[in-house]
Image (tube, rainbow, N blue to C red; front, side, top):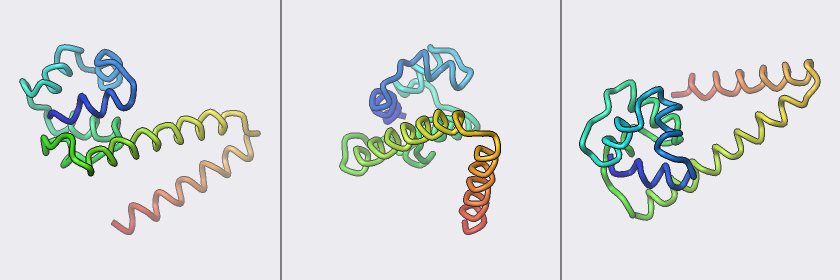
Amino acid sequence: MLNLKQLREAKGVSQATVARELNISRQTYNNYELGKREADYETLLKLAEYFGTSVDYLISNRINDDSSDEIIKNSVESDQDLILLNRNAKKLPPENRKLLIDMAKAMLKEEFDEN
């Protein structure tokens, strides 16, 4: 999974940080980045979610093409937006926070029901 290093560096995190988030050892994660070890399906799903990309992209082993640069850029921007949303939502009064959560749940349900 040669794309992992690009994604990780674009996100500005260390191997240890990613490994900790996925509950795996840093060495295991390093082996994924180097292509010395293949992740199981569950780990692939966690990696794709963490980096905001698809499992297909992770296992394609295509690097440095225009689409990969765009995917990396979009995943990092999306993560930053979600972090800001989360920080600001915590500052809302409880009733407004509940409204926001209900709206998000409704939007996500709609999105997943369409697919």
